[in-house]
Length: 250
Ligand SMILES: NC(=O)c1ccc[n+]([C@@H]2O[C@H](COP(=O)([O-])OP(=O)(O)OC[C@H]3O[C@@H](n4cnc5c(N)ncnc54)[C@H](OP(=O)(O)O)[C@@H]3O)[C@@H](O)[C@H]2O)c1
Image (cartoon, rainbow, N blue to C red; front, side, top):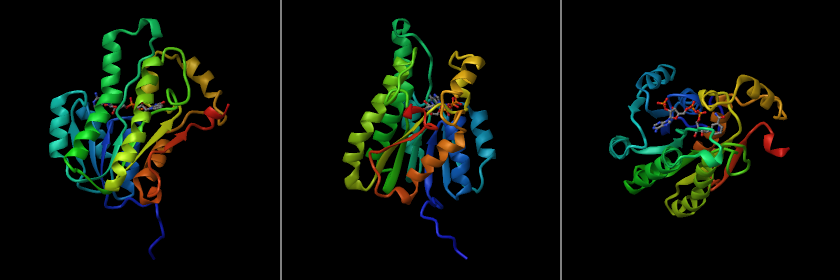
């Protein structure tokens, strides 16, 4: 018996950046379990292969490269097949007090978090690699669009810029029947939060600031992303889905 499921993504071809770790990896694994074919992108070949080994189904492709490099962008956009979905999960963060942010640090953070997803999308759309009824999902953050914390001004600005850009993109791409949305996670248990100079004790205390008294698991963010990739969100564009265990309510 067929099970009714408007959230299905079976047979869709989806490009996921940042697929070698955290939210991108969880999204790839969950999407493969639902029958999607995946193009995995990340810098680290070993970690990408690890993700690939955890996928269900066949026909998935790994692409190792640095998305801040024009050569990688050009190669990826030429070689990827026609896409039904794109998930921009690649991102970095570094906690630096505002007065100590270097030009180089600011430039590097914006190159990864803002320019890479922006330019990758621009080129894929220009090359008509995104199919009609396609869905583009940017992973931004509650930090920037909604919240602010010490040492996060550059990161918050990069995520705020992306969230703002999505609104115009959504309007511009609507005539092509391509939808563009953002997912805004709160703190999520991935390698990213252990590389930003916050101690285990600080993280433990911060988890208690969340109404649900914990951070998200990466799959819990992935399920929101899958909603945007599926036709269940066919009338949703230019929207942001906050997944933060109620943190921004307080
Ligand atoms: N974790 C959180 O609490 C949280 C909260 C809000 C928003 N977010 C956002 O969610 C997204 C995913 O974060 P995460 O927590 O999953 O982090 P993560 O586990 O550190 O994964 C980051 C991914 O981005 C890739 N990446 C970074 N720079 C890249 C570049 N220049 N070119 C290609 N790939 C690059 C990494 O590839 P390599 O493995 O090859 O380095 C890795 O696959 C990010 O945009 C982050 O800002 C995270």
